[in-house]
Length: 231
Image (cartoon, rainbow, N blue to C red; front, side, top):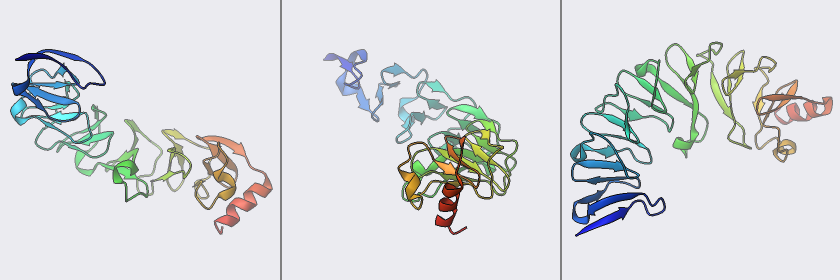
């Protein structure tokens, strides 16, 4: 018996003339039919169904020959050593990728910076990473960042991340030359008077910040903020 399969049903993409007894559902987005593999009904050219593996909760997969992002081959990736180290970063024994694009970084020393949420390690992975020589934001090298002292700060109010080292503050990849690294803080549960402010997500001794944009503080605001953290 032959059927037209709509897979997955909410997408309603059509794969014609499927024989149900030869159909194998590999994961939410992947199926195999005979020795062919499909992602959201798109054929992955040349994929080997017998050795095909879809990484959990990911659009990355591999077989005995290649690593794939959705239906395209990730060039030069070694399927034997390929691993996903965060939702955005991947590596094998020789190379590193950001969202499937090659990143010129040292694989053996490459790691992703996280912030303090050990109960949810996948969600705590940031877009900041480093190897033995550089700090990266996504695929960009932060030339001014100090590798030895760099850390990631996340505001309690939003998903906004700041990178801070001994002398510099970064919002995403942008160096905030007006920010004071020594006193820079993101808003946390101790900053009760700022938690309800929809704009402010960080501050230092001179300014409050909203997505990296500075706002001048009054003397009273400065006093309240820094007393709350026992400066």
